[in-house]
Amino acid sequence: ALARCPLLMLAPMENLADRPFRRALASMGPGGFDESCTEFMRIPGRAERPNNAVRGITSHYSAWELAQQGRPLGAQIMGSDPGLLSLAAHHLAHVKQAPRVDLNCGCPANIVTGHGAGSSLLRTPELLQRCVQAMVDGAGGQTIVTVKLRSGFDDTSLFEEDLLAAQEAGASFVTIHPRTKRQKYDGRAAWALIARARQLLHIPVVGNGDVINVERAHQLLQETNCSAIMVGRGAVQDPLLFHRIRFSFTEPDLPWEWEEPEAVCAFLRAYAEHAFGLVSSSSSSSS
View (cartoon, rainbow, N blue to C red):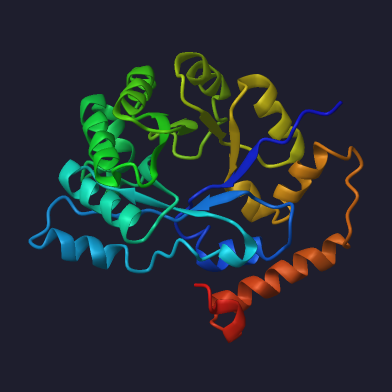
């Protein structure tokens, strides 16, 4: 018997997995991803009017963006000030009704890490823990708080400390992209670190990194025993990838109901419509 398909998640990717991409991917019918998350919303290090700043930064987020397709949309935030992160988590949970609020500890861009955010938090597990704890307190049980992190900044020497900090602070699950900030997207993702996280933590661990086809998805599960799979660039390269992965757990020979070229063309048309604002009023009413 084939194993049961795990939860399949679309990764937050700046300039790639944006609203048009998410909507187009979700429009491809049942069998795609189960859940997605926004690109990061940057929470500043300080603000003269914190509440106004948070409201402005999160104004474009809608938890109901993919409601017609039955897909929840989490909200990812990035920052390093616990107080402002707490305010943001509170607003997203209580006002915006986000199904989850995710802390970005993975962005490798120098413009981000130079301000102490993104993967820069991995250098200071104590601050990482304070940030996650502040978000959990801000959410107040209204929604869950999660963390997406890389395996380290320059190296993996603090990997386990960072994981334990997130768990201790109350994260409901962690997503691991096992490359360091220094690696960016070079080399292979070190899946053995995902397996180590599964051994170390009692909260779920989502595996991410280098899932570009069905075979790699199955390898990731076998090698790491991860709780769920998050796919990023693989879904950009192949918009049918989530369907391929899901069907691979039920039907070895992939019983497509559509011709692949037609399905890809339909995705591209949907993306163009959403990207250039050519969406009918009925399809945009839930945004």
